[in-house]
Length: 211
Image (cartoon, rainbow, N blue to C red; front, side, top):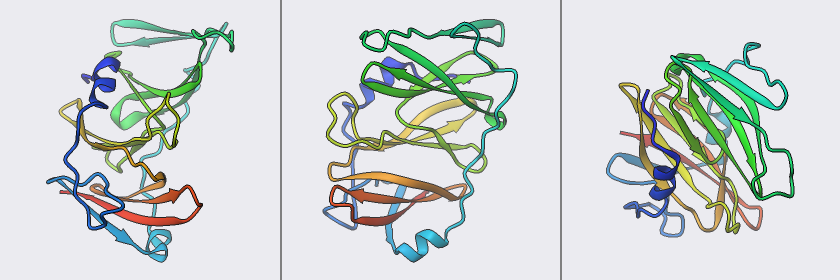
């Protein structure tokens, strides 16, 4: 599987995404390939969750603050730097293995930030994203969101990635200014629902359908 490099992912944050919405105050994610609808609280909570689940494998363990991953024909070393007050501080924590898409998932804690690292278990290719990846039922799409407002180190961003022919491509993204996305649930292979939580603790609910 071929991944985008981390530097390219961060460069994408500067690209303007064409956005439409049925609510001028809550523009989100919409483009020619995505439909966004406002739904009720009842509809949101009635929606079943079909997110692809990961497994925790005993083969992935840390020794002396190091993960050694034998992937494909190469070995990847993920080494902690434990001085928490150091700007170079970094700590890796294994989250799980998405077997159907051959992806190992690690949380990466850094000085003042954290990200998630996806490692292809077959090739060793890597992708670093904000937030925990949420896979569609068949693993064709990934949602991720940083879920933080007003923090200069991390943008408040939602991204949808498409996996096709073992290549992950950015499908669309959006940076909301007034709310944090929470509670993502894939309800089928092409639709998900989530909660928009505002700074005053009010909530709204949306459904996104990928055409």
